[in-house]
Structures are given as structure tokens and as C-alpha cells.
Image (cartoon, rainbow, N blue to C red):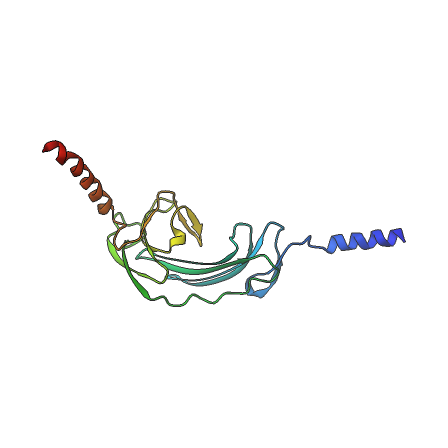
Length: 194
């Protein structure tokens, strides 16, 4: 009897996934995640086309997340879903076509532009103007959703700590920063000169 119990226990241990999640993978195949991973899915529309994927991830934040960015030369809107129950990551729909929201920002003509002074119309949840650098050194400027402000690595978009966001039209200009500095200096100098 003891051998039977030990044999059944061994068989159960070998066939058990140890509580790991079962998640959908691409093509709706199922996959077993590692114990520290969640199920995830994403769909995105960009100037380069549409993508969908289902995956296991240890770095995804639970819940639904929408991100959107438009640099003038490229744009992307994506929906991301991360969950912690088996087979909870069904494929999300592609993002809807987003309508203009009235915010305008400076953007770039192309990815390696030394100056970004193109007018970009923000759409949907793009409620911030953004400026800064990609991790690999290129200047960026354009429209972004609030959740992309600050150090981020989402959907293959990697920004550095120097990335800045602001909330009014054309506030992402280098000239705006310089003009504010000039006004501050004038405010300090004028009382002394009088």
C-alpha cells in the first residue's frame, strides 16, 4: 500500500505544473508560464502596421493599459492586458481609430531629425506633449499618453530619464524652455538696473 501511495505521489508531482498559469500563446495555443509570470496579451496599430500577441511575462503590470504616442514620423497606439488566472489572456481587439483631441505638439520629420518643429495633432488619450531622447540617443518630440511620461520601456518604446512631458499645446519646444530662462534673468536684472 505504501508503494502505491508513493508511486501516485511521484506521478502527481511529475505531472503537476506547480501552480503555474496556463496562458494562451500566439495562434491560441496554450502554454505554461513560469511560477513568477502572468498571462498577457497586446494589440497595437502603428505606422508600420498592426500586431497582436499573447504571452507569459514576469514584468507586466496587472490590468488593462492603453498607451499612445505620435512623433510626427511614427505613431503607435496599443492595448495591453495582464492577468493572473489561467487562460485569462484572450486576444484583445485592435485599437479603434482615434479622433483628434485639440492638443498640438512639436514633432519630428524623421527619426534622426536634429530639430523637431513639425506640428503634430494629438489624438485619443494623447494628453501630453513629450520631448527628450530615446535610450539610443535620438531626439524625440510629439504627443504621448500620460502613462508614457517618465522612464519607461513599453511596447518597444524606450525613453531615458531626461524625457519631459507637459500639458499645453506646443509646450515641448526647446525655445519655450530658453524663453522662460531669459524671462527669469530679465526679472533678476531689471530691479538691479533701476
